[in-house]
Length: 197
Image (cartoon, rainbow, N blue to C red; front, side):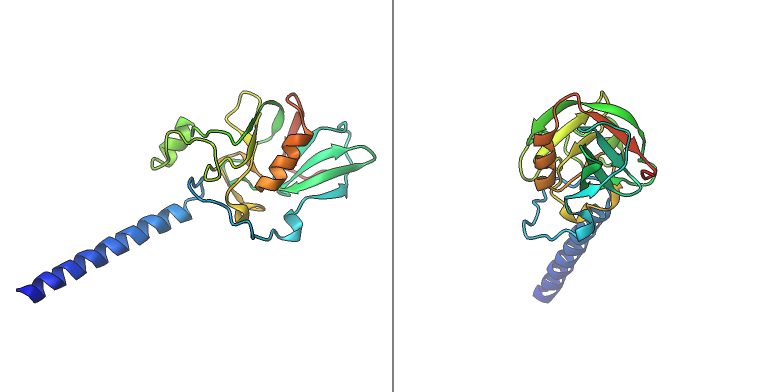
């Protein structure tokens, strides 16, 4: 009888471990935001996604933000035919969009309230999360018009350069803090799915 009990306990523990691993794997494979993860400060971005000044042709005036979802870059237009280019994560297939908006609000270490449509797709998400290092909006957020979309930081730097979000644009925390300090509320934001010519 004791050996049967030990076998039952071992089997139960193994099942619990498999279920726990399956749940963790399912969440890690989900393309949405993942709360509670804190970025590894030692993560090295690929050079393609690092902030840099580039030559950039546009008719938009300096101070305008241009997002190219196809390139996965955000440009802050500068004088003299240049722009500061940041690597970004963009909306996954079916969640990309284009348009002309303005920054209507800025927040440091913003709180996160997932919109109802996101909760419907990902019911395990919290209904509210206070701002901080484990918050999926990261260190800063800039709200776009009256939409649910934002330019924000991320605690998942490995997602920069990917199509993974629900339509927001994410930058590593250092880059979003840099951009946040450079642009005021009212900044024009042009979102394009095709690159600049």
